[in-house]
View (cartoon, rainbow, N blue to C red):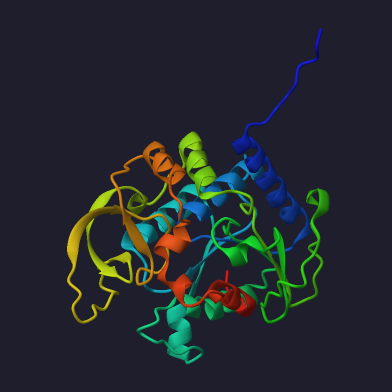
Length: 302
């Protein structure tokens, strides 16, 4: 009689890898933190972390790098989720850096690039030595270069030519005081994997990820939400459209797509036939140059 075999599905294998990463960090670092914006990737990351340490809550706080230009629905969801999971929320604010003169705001450029200073300040002030992020390799070519454990020097900078091998899922988190490691448990997931997991696990998300009516503005081939943070350019006229967001970030540079998808299953069907990543299709801040994301990551960005 043949012995029974035990095989994981594709999503179960991805989840198991992420659970392993979370437990590895919890066992080897003193002060980890999970970056949590309320977006789909950070929510999946938190959901997996909760499973990794159940029945105890995750043994680390969550941190939101707040640009001050957020979607109201996302901030409400963030606060509700923190209460539901019983987490400690650390908020580091871009506005604080602007007010203190540490960074200078360019109203035409948005605040996304200014998040780097706020992120590094938050890491430094709380002495975090490992920072979980929800970045995935399929999002953008600079992120495709990055390891699961991404070493950052005392200035928070990333050197793409000096990364550590990760053979057989063995991770090297060695670092000196003042340095830290960015950790990406979802590196090997795709956008389709994320949505299939959301559907399978019934993961809660902000309402803007699903189809709804809202005023939008057409700009540079993208639909931007017409919010109190968006300054209209000459000739721009808002109109109502049925849209959803594929990714969530600063409201001044995060675009939406026309869609009628009102459930995870319907989003899965949309994503399965898409030929553009969510960042390539809906993030204006990634269009500054061919190497825009890599340049920002070298400075300390997510």
